[in-house]
Structures are given as C-alpha cells and as structure tokens.
Length: 327
Image (cartoon, rainbow, N blue to C red; front, side, top):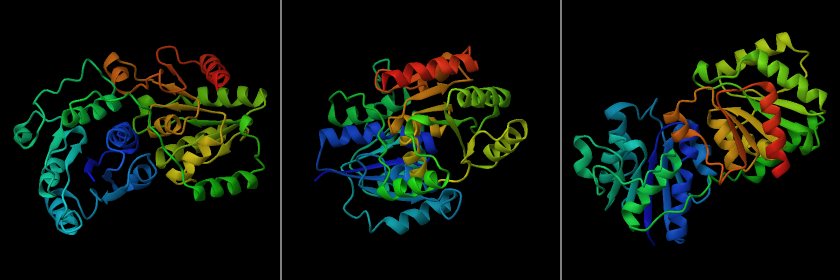
C-alpha cells in the first residue's frame, strides 16, 4: 500500500482547494493511505474532505509556532510516521513543510519552491502547469511530478458527517424552517474588507428575496461577521436568520446542503458551498485578472455563476435564477 503525505497549514478555502489533489491520488492509487497535516482550526475541513484517511492538526499559532514548535511537532509524530511515505506534496512550497516531510521519511517530496530549499525537492525548479492557473488545478499537478501522467480536473468534495446533519435538522426545526427550496444562504464577509458585500446591498437583497418568498440565512464566522450582522440588524426588520458564529464547519457544510443556493463573497464559505455541490453565486469584489485566474471556480465543474465588475443586487438575483434552474 502506498502512503502519501500532504501538508497544507493555510486557511479554510486553501484546505478545500487541496482536495482535488487527494481525489486524484485515490483515482491513481485506490488503496493508498493519505495523511493530511492541516492548520489546527481547519481540522474539520480536512477530516470530511473526500479521499483523506488521516488528519493531523498543526497548531502553528500555539504549541507548534516557529522553529521550536516545528521541532516539537516532529518529535511528537516521528514514531507515528516511522513507516515513512512514498511521496509528500507540500502546498504553497512551505519550507517548514518541506523539511518536515523529509524528516518524516518521505522518499519523494514535491512542492512549488524556487528558493534555496529547492534542492530537497524531486520536481523541477519550474513546474510545467500546462498554462493552468487555478490554484486547485496547480495543487493537483504536483501529483503529475510523481506519476508522470496527466491529472483529472475534479471538483472539491466535502462530505458532512451524519451527526452534522442531525444537528442542523434540529436547528432548522427550532427555527420552523422545513423547506429546502425556500432557504438562501448569504455570506458577506471575509478577512479583507475590500472583498465584502456592501451592507446596503445585503439589506436590499434580503428584502427582495423575502418578497419572493425566500428565507435568507446570514452566515459568517469571527468578529468581523458578527459586527456586520449587528449593523445589518439595525437597518432591517430582522427578516433574516442569523447563524453567524452558530455552526461548526461540518454543520455549515450540512446546512449548505439544505439550502437552495448560496450567495457568497470570495472566502472559505464560498469554496465550501461549491464542495457540497450547492448552487453558488460567487461575488468577486476584487477582480483583477490574476486574482480571478487563480481563485475563481471553474464553471465547467461547479454549478456556479461568477460576478465581478457589475455586482448589483439585480444581477445577483439574475444569477440565482440561472444556477437554480440548472439544479
């Protein structure tokens, strides 16, 4: 049995965007074992992604912070990984990850890194991405360096556990919400203010959805999302369901499966909606060609619509109608 190691200690969306690599590995090596080292807050993301067999949390802001923390992590897991790995794939060329992969006995290590540490890698200094620009595709192409065969362009796939569905069913029942066809999820905030939906647009969108008989569910996590929700409540008639900071990641995935569609800014929730195959309107308030080439979803493999320069409430509603008619 082949053993593979993937190290990605980045964020929510980044973790999901690594899943097509995992899915490709399982297609080439169905009986392989995939270990995924993930940033601790996003352990649930990796745990319920398709194809991953083992998830190891890396607490990079806590006990595994810095060089001392990385050495502590190695000592914690060196016996656990004593069998080593046939190959390791290090996302975003993280130098700490490259060194750890070698310490954990990876026979081959693949990453995009053109720095001095490149000598530890088994791929060329400049990887041939075949003019592909999507982050998820470039992640998957790391596997080509090992197989020397072309990868498949696969969608992300997140599979919420049954317990998450049970919790969401109870939550929706307590809110007297029963019809999937009436629920529209909205995620308006990210880690960068310039990527967020203007609050007046959100107010108008909720009002028009309500007029059409839909129930809007506001999503988000953290203080920024909470402050946004508080301001929104002050200018609306509270004609939306506030679920900001009220679900775990797996519960959020289950909730999105219960919704007719998702409207989301460019953030982890958008990628999660795509990964559970919920029709998604993707709002890219930052829309440089470079950004869209890397981060916008591929419409050929996802049921989504992408809005960039002319993001109006009217256009959001048009996109919603288009993607829900296809579903």
